[in-house]
Length: 365
Length: 125
Image 1 (cartoon, rainbow over the protein chains, first blue to last red):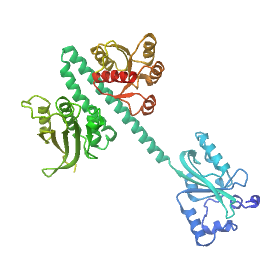
Image 2 (image 1 turned 90 degrees about the horizontal axis):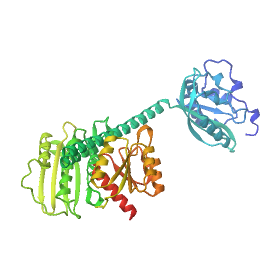
Image 3 (image 1 turned 90 degrees about the vertical axis):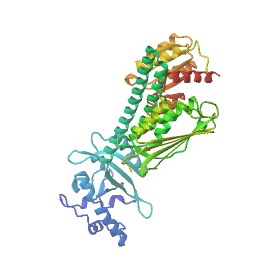
């Protein structure tokens, strides 16, 4: 607008010291006869401005120092200032000692280039307390494309930011915990190995370590969701088995999402480790051709919810049921599943071992 | 299986028990282990030793150090290295940047050494 100097601003029309500000549409229109707030849409717009909980202000880019010429009720509620303290001033009175100059510079640049901008910056209320302001600003043009105002909306996002910070902190903690846990498992492995070496039982210590490490990998996947009490078993299954299937084609995961109680993870971890160790020694992974397919899903066994895992070895050497299995990994698996009220069925098919495992999910329906 | 007798392997880990476990596993293979627990020690060993075949580096070390300076020094000398870490998530950027083979902790010391030697051989081939 070329005759901006003459355009009346809100500031010099305000009764100074008015404690209660009437921003009803009637008055807004009376103050601004030249603006095109006409008809039903104008009334709706004005009412919305007055009633919205979003703090809104308009600044006049044609007046010296781009002062605020309109601020709605929400703006006053947010900042704690009375209207006469707001109107006529540049928005920067909301800034304070810890306001980031970089964000202020972005605002300055957006004003200079008539750009739309959303920034978060620390602002200060009249009482000196600070709040995080998500400021949206942009130019408002008249019908002829002349710049009339800058529009600014303010939203207190302090809570959002606090929640974000807390979430970030929780993630950092989870990662730190995860790191320490893996390290602890690695140290335990070291102790087992070194003790095995001193006692001359390296083979036994390696076997113990295999189990410890499978458990470590399984537990590690549960950390991210430690607060929920239930876990995504697929991630744990992948983590347990991934070291065995160096080749992608030889370890195929068929299962998808299945949430199970956290307690399930140790049984699943140890059982799959024993199956994988057996496959490496005698089964599908003992030669160059075989592969293992692993499927898992939630299902029902005897009318109660259960996690069902199918282990299928394909293309390996011909297998047959071992004659004496007591005291081996197989016996441990059987015993463990019995104690977990679960079941295991092994089928020594010609093309490879097929195992079906079920672990009850208890009250988690 | 890699023929690796006479290989010299640089080990970097700030946890003495893990370092000891790895050292034993290196000796089992008939190789020589150079053990370090800080970046400075590793760099010193690197400068004092004529031939190192492969290095195994823990990523996150004490006092906020990471293995990156050692990795860079190894790269300069054309010595292959693998990363042995329980902290791969957090070190995502660093690790991707280094373009090295990753071995997640916990893994058995024997398999760590085996993979490092295999990697070394593949790199040289």
